[in-house]
Structures are given as C-alpha cells and as structure tokens.
Image (cartoon, rainbow, N blue to C red; front, side, top):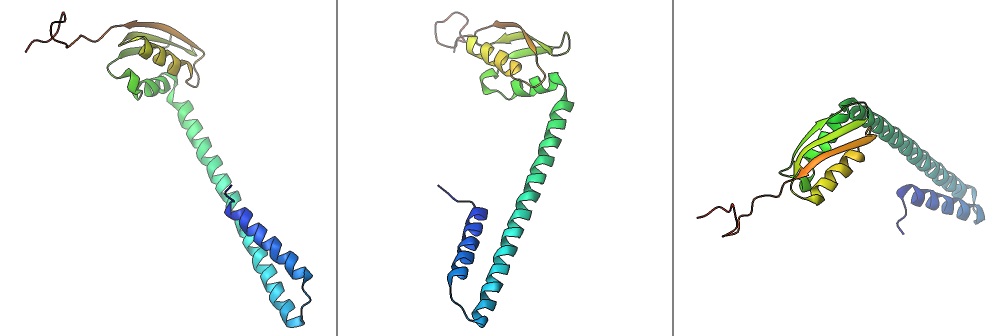
Length: 153
C-alpha cells in the first residue's frame, strides 16, 4: 500500500518526537532536538495548508463545471453525449424536447445495439426525466459482391 507524502512526513515527525523524548540529552543536543521539532511542525503545517488549498481549488473547479453543464441546456447535454459516442457514428438522430425533462429521439440508427446505446446515454444525462424513443433501425447497405444493392466494380 502506498503512503501519501503527508502521512509519511507526519509519521517521520512523530517518530522523531518520540525518539527525542526518550534520549537522555545535553543542553546543546536539546537545542538540536528543538530545531528538529520546529522544522517537523513547520513541515506538517505546510502540508496541511497545501492540502486545504488543493481541496478548495478542486471544489471551485467542480462548481464551475457543474454550472457550465447546467447552463448548456438539456438538448446540448444530450447532443454532446450522442455526438461523441463511437457506437452511434453514422446514425441520424434528431432531438426534441416536448416538455421540460423529456427528450424525444427521432431518426435512424444502424442496429439494435446503437439504438439501445442512444436511449441509455440520453436517459443517463443530467436533467433528463423521460426518453421518448422514436428511433428506427436502418441497416447499412451491404457491400459484398452479389448482394442486392451492392456496389459493382
């Protein structure tokens, strides 16, 4: 199991403090131990501050992204998900929003798997409460020799 840098520094600092308290040391050595304690304490404080700053930065970025996604509108979110899905390449899908939270899928896809994927992606999109599936399956024309509609050389 990997240990985080923060946990490692805290562990080392704690180990040094425990070891220092068990040594019988002279006044000069006590000064060195006090310096080590101070440096370890500073390191721990610095790590805590850095972790808090990173946490705040992540929260801010998440809030901005969330606001951006909400601002896109439901059709924009669905369109983006369908547009970038490899299983839907060549599909002709039109979107409509008959009422708030409802997306109607109209058009054609190449097979049942693509149809299922389009409905699933739409249903799993933020803001979609209902999907109206009006997609039809239209198989791509065959290109094998001798097949009806095949391109002949």
